[in-house]
Length: 158
Image 1 (tube, rainbow, N blue to C red):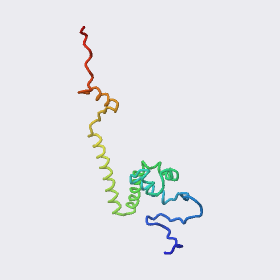
Image 2: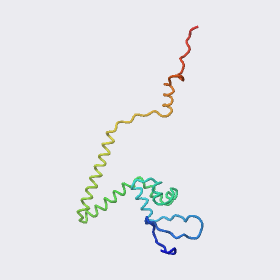
Image 3: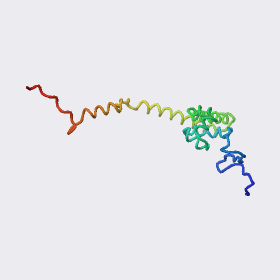
Image 4: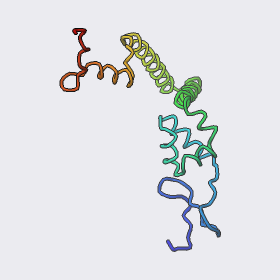
C-alpha cells in the first residue's frame, strides 16, 4: 500500500478519516455504529470512562455526543437481554426448534438468577451500624492507657 491509498477502517473496525487541512483535532462525529458500540459497552457493564476508552474519545466527548446512550446505561444489560429474547421468540414462532430451546434455556436461567438473588438477599443478616470516624476517635481517646492516660481527679483531702 502506498502513502496515497486509503484503507477505510483500522484494526478494530473504526473508520479512518483522512486528515483535513486545519489545526487541532477534528470534531467527533456521531454515527450509528459508534452509538451501538457504546450501548454494547454499557450492556457488558462497563463504566462511562471505560466506554469512552473503547470508543477512543474522552469522557466529556462521550457525554456530549452520546448523552442518550449514557442515560440508558443502567438498563442497557436488561434491554439487551429482552431484545435477544424477543428475537428468539420470533424465530421460535417461525418454527425454529433450536431458537425455542435456547429461549427456554435463557428464560429458565433468568428465573433461577432472580430466585438466587432473592434467596441471597433474605439470607444476609441485617447490618449493624458501624461507628463513624469521629466516634471511633472518641472511643480510642477514652480508652488510652499508659503514659498518656488521663490522670485521676484530685482528692478532697486538706
